[in-house]
Amino acid sequence: MAVEQTLSIIKPDGVEKNVIGECFRRFEKGGLKIIATKMVHLDQAKAEGFYAVHKERPFFASLVKFMTRGPVVISVLEGENAIQKNRDIMGATNPAEAAEGTIRKDFASNIEENTAHGSDGPDTAKFEIGYFFDAGEIHSR
Ligand code: CMP
Image 1 (cartoon, rainbow, N blue to C red):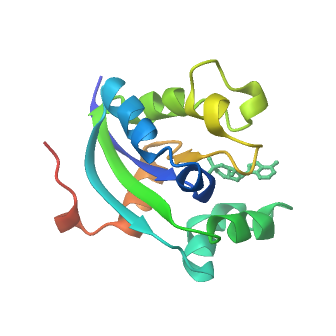
Image 2 (cartoon, protein in one colour):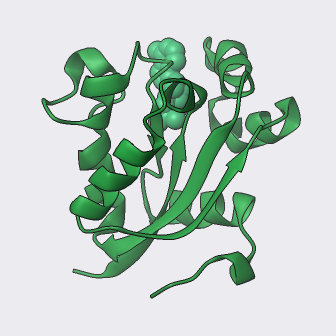
């Protein structure tokens, strides 16, 4: 298994619910290291660019509105198999289908306001990390 890096976003609903530390605790307990992190209030252009792959989806405008309604916490997580590990810690996109003990099961309101984002593969992770962080802001350790 390879050491990977993946992008995590604690979305506006997660920040509003004050579960930043709880999400970080689950990442660390799950064997992931936070090697970069910052709080950002995304503007419309930045959110649209991040989710550009979904721009034809019916939920795109609503998703961008949600992601810009308040600050988010964006992090780079590192560890063995980090991409899948983070997705396991988050649970299914739809909290109604998420496993017990996952972030989305415990904190998400619905399929859109689902508390956390994680990269879904190596290429996506590379794009997403570069979209938010310069190399000098990432502290692999
Ligand atoms: P995320 O993992 O960040 O990737 C795309 C996001 O779009 C997803 O989490 C949800 O926030 C949102 N999303 C996915 N499917 C739907 C849907 N059917 N309706 C509304 N929002 C959705």
